[in-house]
Image 1 (cartoon, rainbow, N blue to C red):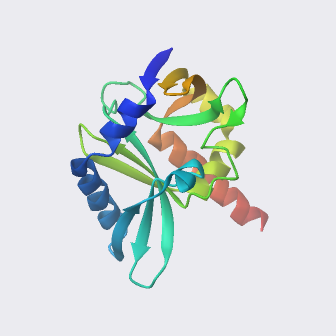
Image 2 (cartoon, helix red, strand yellow):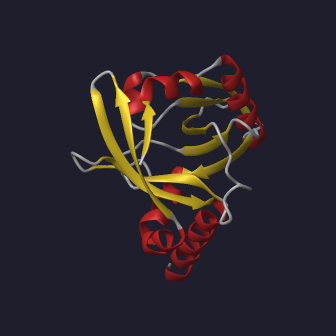
Image 3 (cartoon, rainbow, N blue to C red):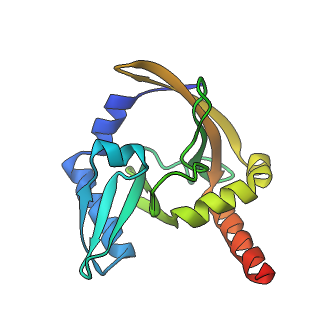
Length: 181
């Protein structure tokens, strides 16, 4: 079981250098974006860490999954993406990857030590995780994390999977919808 400190992790993920790195990644993915703006605490609870502002006035939400270490070449299966299934094991609150109530438009995994980033359309990712959960469980590695915060601690659980397996699920899910339509 992994133990983390919410406030330490949050502070580490919100440094000015990382904000610049996030903006660089967003700008590469969305060249038409004008800026990213830090979300407030209420939006954070709904799955938004940053707002992406576009020249045409459109605004989309971004959930950043900050990782200090990129395990891409250290794990034989290239499992580097943690897919949270249960956000709080005591209450059974759904994790971000399957919670249909999240307002998130985009999920970005950002690996600080390599600068690598991977973007997902949040709705497509969520639908694929739900549809192909048995497959992801078969190729993923289960992980439970205890997170300490000012209010005590809570446990979360999910799977560590590869981005290639996530993309397979998204592609399969989009094809099955296209065929069924």
